[in-house]
Image 1 (cartoon, rainbow, N blue to C red):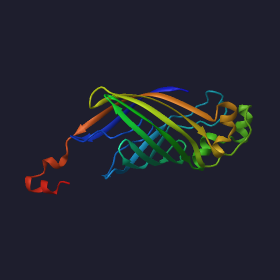
Image 2 (image 1 turned 135 degrees about the vertical axis):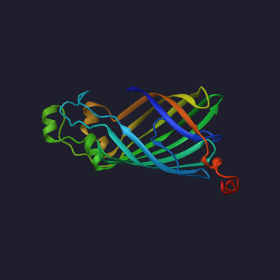
Image 3 (image 1 turned 60 degrees about the vertical axis):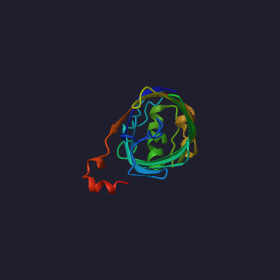
Image 4 (image 1 turned 45 degrees about the horizontal axis):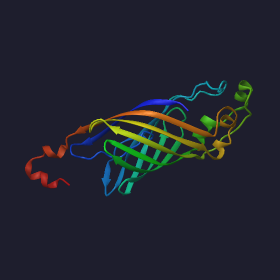
Length: 227
């Protein structure tokens, strides 16, 4: 388990309440927001994989930038469901999807949340991180050749404790675990070098930029068009 400090940025309009989010989701904003349903673009990045921790001889996977979209729904208070679909434009160059569900509650300046996670990756993603070519197996000396295929790659959960210093600034401490599934979980890389059980923890510093509603600058006769 490796702890990471992590920055997070959000944008909201003046008078608009803060929207629930967690540190493990992508960077996104809604272009449609009505009745608890939010839809919009999303981006994410995945740190590069080097050759540390027994990975000598395996291919390096460069820093990956992922872009795509998200759908989020709040069916009732203090609960949200979210799905992200993202394509890696470099690095692993695969298609991935992440599914979230969170129950959350605020107590004073604190907000607590917990919920399950399920992840999907296609063949390109699985091959980049979990396949072993015959040459790589020979150089590494501990692994046998293996071809990983796409599918549901992991399932687990995440818990977060957030503290709001001000309406704009907050810090979150989070931790969770995932178990690798399917072809990815059967790869010799986690089974012989690492573990099928993956744990993570981190500290997220977040800041919300509050921007004016551009419709407030419309001439008076046009403000009747404001939703």
